Length: 135
Image 1 (cartoon, one colour):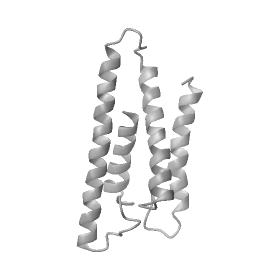
Image 2 (tube, rainbow, N blue to C red):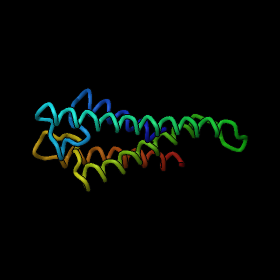
Image 3 (cartoon, rainbow, N blue to C red):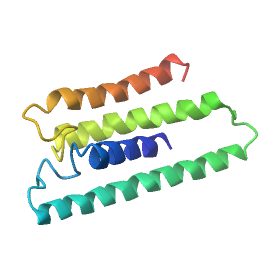
């Protein structure tokens, strides 16, 4: 569920509200209607994928709740959110931003690296909080 929630924050906040980038804006800047529509389509595919991640997380949570040997606590739940969201940022940020250059956190600037590193750093911070909390 954490990976899905992290993806929703990325897609809703960075793609739609702030409009800092689109899924393919590093390869196809949305400077005309056709390119904007292609980017919007792939943003929709991205949102569908994170919806599926969230739904799978809910299914796993439901199954875990039925088991007596699984600790049922807020700490376990929030630990799962931290590790999932942290892994989402690190994996998506490394692959899409740095390796493939599909987009960057703040696409429409000459220097992408500070925002990309902040995105990755936030993911590492979430993973560090998970570890520090005894995860």
